[in-house]
Length: 240
Image: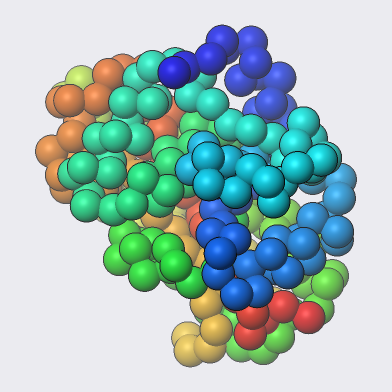
C-alpha cells in the first residue's frame, strides 16, 4: 500500500542509506549494530521485508533513531517491486532493496551473506578493497556512495523516462550508463584494487528492466526506481 507523498518527502530528505539484513544470520546483528553506533547521525531506511520479519530486533530504533520504515510513495513503485521480483527471479527482499534505494535516492547497504549472491548476479560492476578499512575510511566511502547516488540520479531518471516512452535508444543509454559507472569507480581510488574484498556493487535498475522487457509494463511513476544503485556491502573482512 502506497503512503502519501508528503510522508515520503519528509523521510527522503534525511535518508543516507537503505538497509537489507537477515538478522537470523550469524554476526548480522553485530554488523548492523556497528553501523548504527558509529554513524548515529545518519537516518537509515529499512525495507518492508526486514520489518515484517525482524521488527523486534529494531524495537526502540525506528522513527529516525536511526532507522526509518520505508513505504512506496506511489502505487507504481510498489508494483515495480513485484515486477522486479517476478521477472528477475529474485527474493522480495532484494527487489525491495533495489527499488526503494533508487526511489529514496540512497545507496543500498547489505549486511550478511544471504542476499549477496543474488545481488552479485545483478551487478553491472563492483569495487574491491585491498585492505581492511578503518573507521575514517568507512565514513569517507559511505559519503562517497551518497555522492554516487546524487550525481547519477537526475540524469538516470530522465533516461528512464525517455527509454520507457521510446524517445531514447535504450541500448545507447545503457552504454552511457556503463561508462558513467566506470568513471565513478575512480572515486574509490583510496581503497580500490583489481582483486581484494568486495566493498560495493553497482546495480543498474534500468538495464535490468530493459533486459526483462519490463519498460512497457511499468508505469511512468515508477521511473524514479530505475536509477543506478550502489550497494555497499558490510564485508566482515573490511570492518575494523
